[in-house]
Length: 329
Image (tube, rainbow, N blue to C red):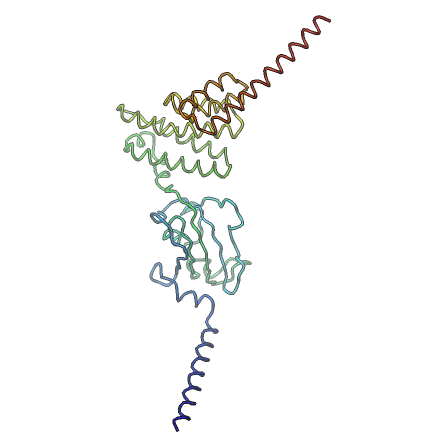
């Protein structure tokens, strides 16, 4: 009797296990994902799973975000849209460039470096109509998002929308924050080799600082301190654009603020070298070397200037020698 009961128990366990397995297999991929995701808004419309946590504060409203993202339909392992094939994804302005409400709300829950998944119901994605031919009607969408960086550009937009008179009434600390963000935009463009865009951002920063009607010596000093890295960045950008005259103009402006600045002296040396003004290049670089005697870049450029100077002198000697030979003849 006990043997029979044991057999029945074993059969029941097998049946239960088989039913559980069947239920698991009948659950759709998105349903399985839902079980491990958190509800962002409380209405099950946007669900989130953090795969890799980020650092720092969350993305603020109206920020400009640089992110890789891919959108998937259920039962599809190929995205209907993705930025992962781009080396440099474009910067997206929240409230303007991100068209899906669910994706924008999801981005504002993320931090720099974070990688997360979002499951969006139709009302937070492409709606009841979908987006033919890529997204069918009333489709639930999965987005995988990796935040590379973001800038709080909302403050910049608000500041630039002010009149010059209003800009002069705000605390200097706000102006400096705005200029720092603008410079960060320029740095991002420069790192992506978009040098004309970088130049425009840096010049925008110098204009904002130049428009400030300063009252105290302390404020003037803070503005000069903020102008210095902008002039240095402009000098390097103009060198990349192969415009050494303009590069020299900005490195000289930097030297007017800090005559012993090694970066400014180095930039001047680079510009003078491009202009074939070897004496001036050597003078700037020797001054920079005195501040940083073991700097590899400075020493290498000094050697290059010396070689170019020697080649130039050799060519001049050869040219004069030919002239004298012709005169003798």
